[in-house]
Image (cartoon, rainbow, N blue to C red):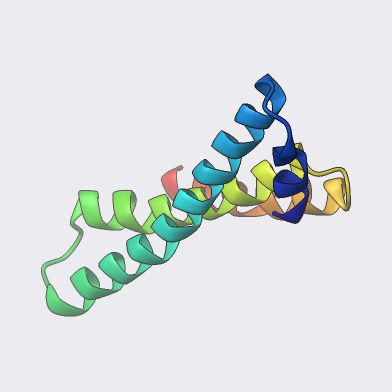
Length: 101
């Protein structure tokens, strides 16, 4: 997110927005691996309990949706390779839509 930090030099509303956006992206990028590890731990330790909706739907798909949100945020914030990041971000959303359907 180098471009966001470059815009951060001023003190106007755009600089505040850039700092806030960078913080949100950093938090999301920390939440994705935490959700993935939580999902893995629950799946490995639950044994043969069958389908547990909050685990299988919530944690599993939640990690994928957050990953897609990061890709879409990059497409929205940075003009470089925008279409590529948009398509990369839409692919996991289609996967989750298929899972939920």
